[in-house]
Image (cartoon, rainbow, N blue to C red; front, side, top):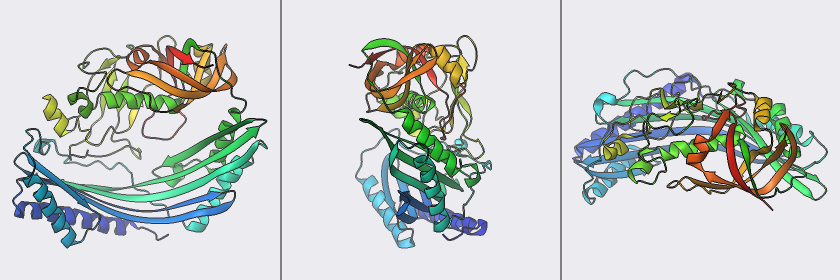
Length: 454
């Protein structure tokens, strides 16, 4: 793989910034009253192996350019993967042609100029990895070998994959704002199959980071893959009942995504959210704090500005159990008569603080003890969440817990409740976050849910 030096990165970033400036100038020449554009360039390597043999070796290099023009309150957008001057002019012409045929939207337009990010923090997001294919293959095979060798009951493999990617992103608009930054992301994953008698189970694990030095080792990822897979052997169904439910950190992250979806601007102005009109009201117990940390060094969700060019900033979404803010971009903020929160494109590094109604933060063993007898959910299936009502019904797998100890694995069950009740019924959040990602949470203990089984 070709090494990308700091000088190369700076030169490519400068080129993207020049393209965006030229594009904005071209939009003005074609009569647009305002315009915004985003340009990106990505290069990477991804290799997958299975049963000790190479399956794919893929070098990637992709470019992208999106342009939105405004003629008053009429809007048109176009995109291209060709960054040549001719293609840029064609994209602007296409966007202008679309705008000329659209109706006015009173909420369309750029974010306010005074909200643009002016002082960009160094978030330490760029750590290129000079990963040659031969070394990548060696690391992926070592990971798969560690998983396959963990236990003789592991009888097959879905393979291991390793990847490295460098990305450049530039955004600019007619306010005179043009800025960009480089970033990297590296990853390693593995999935295997185990069998014992008639029971056959599959599971996986992975690691991802901005810097390769922060990845888990291939042996560690492989062992974790093997552990998770073998632990599921002998799974059985449960009788239908109501019981407390402990969501593992990985599945609890999905509950946080349900929260952010419900308080996003598009859900709110479409009135398709179960948290409509709930600002400054309790939606969790008073010990819960959920916050966004967009300037976290090396954070997987870190960004100095959002998709509108608005400066990102740390904030509480929930504090003392009370919903403190929605997640808005410039357009949805206007629709709601509010101010953008700098969340065009989503939330950046979401966190929930470990907490408990009674004892304070608990580790994994402490959370199982707090559960007592009930269900530990480690996998969710399907998409059974109604964003309008909050009704929640998902296929699930995991473990039945008795007196704070795992008794046996379970599968082919459904858990059901309502997110409003589940949020208010949160008893504890553990300090046992054990997975990589921009959303960080420990396990969640919910007071009671319906479990449908045999």
